Image 1 (cartoon, rainbow, N blue to C red):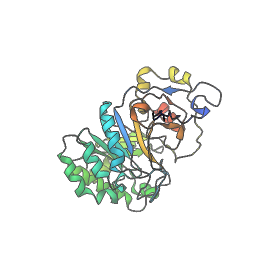
Image 2: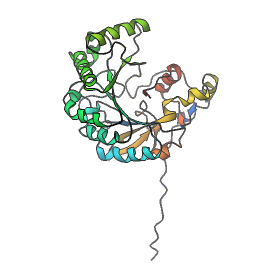
Image 3: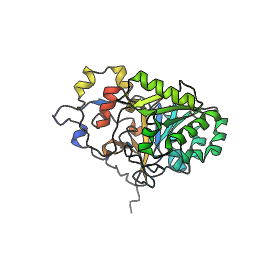
Image 4: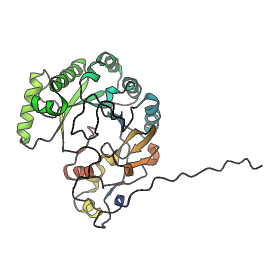
Length: 313
């Protein structure tokens, strides 16, 4: 009896025609990855809040993407280190809903700096004592807190009554403990950039924070699964309106995101496209780095138009 093991070559999932062409039949624009400087982990779509505008559609108990466990994250942390990663970053959902979050950070911080995107409300506040020992690591742990608006009432419309004050409480606690912090908000069409900067500075000063606290603004990315009409990004667009340097600055050129989908770990192109299975590139980081990334998602146009990036590197 022939006992030789014949390896089976698994087929990669086929991409939709839109991955390669625009609706007008033009060749699609692509980004060629050149490095793995930053590895993102999606900690799951469960969240303590249910914001109607959430780009992940997160809410309490949501299971579209499952909660990240330590045993899920460790192999990708280890592989990323072999590929020269410079930072680990975490998004959700609310990362501190995941019970292994502090354990994951404790492991990752042994090797590289980390960043966590959080709403800084109850899940984080209840774990502040667990976070304090992480300050012993030589690598920095940075927190970016979501504040949708400088006006508490407008922030609380989407996040719930009292959430603005609670987010500032969590932000102030992190800052006072010695962690690096920043704030993220959506672009406010009703205000000039100067007005927005001034109003947020006043909020920060009142909360006992530095008036010039670093702040990142994002366009409206819309909830997941929507068919949002945006201009199509063709191959011609990428050479006519972009340079080699600007293309290398796209997140998908220097980062990837790992998610847990139906119990299986997958590597996606970036933090903004996990609602489209075409962007599931591979099951390992090394394989994912070989896949050029299509600019077909409507959120890709935000990167094209605004230079939007979730990274703070």
